[in-house]
Image (cartoon, rainbow, N blue to C red; front, side, top):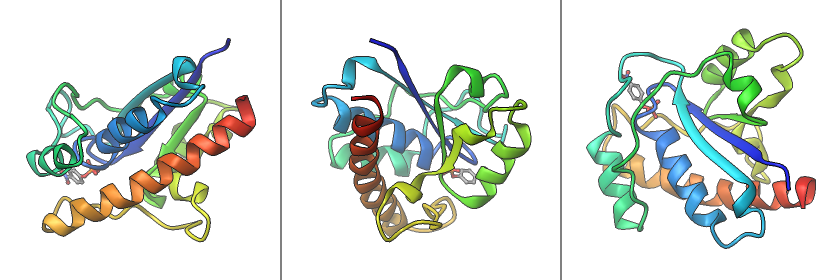
Amino acid sequence: MSEIGVLFVCLGNICRSPTAEAVFRARAAASPLARRLRVDSAGTGHWHVGKPPDPRARDAALRRGYDLSSLRARQVTADDFRRFDYLWAMDQDNLAVLQRMAPVGYAARAGLLLDVLPGRAGDSVPDPYYGGEAGFEHVLDLLESASDALLERLAEAHG
Ligand code: 4NP
């Protein structure tokens, strides 16, 4: 049973990608793949390294039963391309950063998360940092749908 490494990547690693990590882990728990999955998140920026997720992201996630309290922000590294099979960027800017830092031969491991969601290819998970509470709910809606679609895709590829 080989491991399947999944890394979610946003800018700060305090809003979208830690939420994606917790949502995906929770929704994968009932999947036959669960025991093989290694799930983590990281940011392309360094500003929030070591910090817990944004309180607004934590509160919105907890209302849906996802606990982000143990997560701490870290910055993505080139070595993550060797450690994870899939690096899912929340938006095009972060995908571009990943593609620039990928070791030779590894760029194909990076993709845009919403490309897994039918009808949403090319779309971004919008950055909720400078907005209101509704933005965090929208992020959760997108990440719940994307997590389920990603699980289906992984089951097809690795099942
Ligand atoms: P995230 O949100 O990329 O979803 O974690 C952000 C967090 C912090 C900043 C921007 C976006 N910031 O500019 O500090």
